[in-house]
Structure formats: structure tokens, C-alpha cells
Image 1 (cartoon, rainbow, N blue to C red):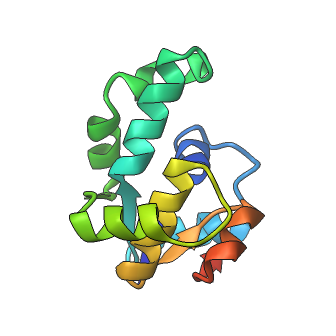
Image 2 (image 1 turned 135 degrees about the vertical axis):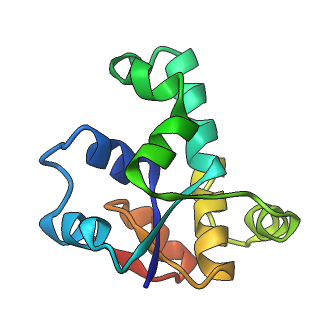
Length: 128
């Protein structure tokens, strides 16, 4: 099975945060699962760190690609198809990072690991 991590799920996994659900933890640690981290998450972490909203994530924010590799996760690049769906989707949700993750989840037929209920607007598979 393949799964795509929302930004908070990725960070909570890295920091062993108890806010990560036991089901999500089980899915992520299963070696039979392919766990992806979107370029949109990398962009979001770098942006929020630069703005001072993720100061506790300095080590991660300065080498996100390295952390994706250390965890054995797979980087999911943003394609033109992802961008077109994210930008044109007629869903009342303004967060560009969320719109991209939803588009990638939909087009790649990959469940999104997230606690964010706003993703229900996109009619994608959500795991928590």
C-alpha cells in the first residue's frame, strides 16, 4: 500500500509526537507500505520555518530532503497535472499546500495520512 503524509503527520513522526494516532504510526512503520512526502510539504515546512512558525523544527527545516531519506520515505514531486487539479479544483478551501496534497492524493490514488477534517471536502481517502 502507498500513503501520502500531510505535513503535520510527517513532522509528528519525526518528533515521535504523541499527537500522531496509533493507526497512523502503525501504517507508517509497516515496511510493506510506501510512505511519500510531497514537495508541497517541503515547501510548507521551509516557508513556515522562515516565517518563525516552526522554530522547533530547525534541524528538519534545514535538511528536509535528508530527513525524508533517513526515514526511508519517498519524495513525491509536484507534476503539472497535480498543479492543474490543485489550482482548478472547485472546492472552497484556500490553503495551497492542502490543495496540492489533495490533488496528489487523488491523482496518485494514494490515501492521505492526516488529522485535518478539511480534506473531506476533496473526496479523497483519508487515514488517521
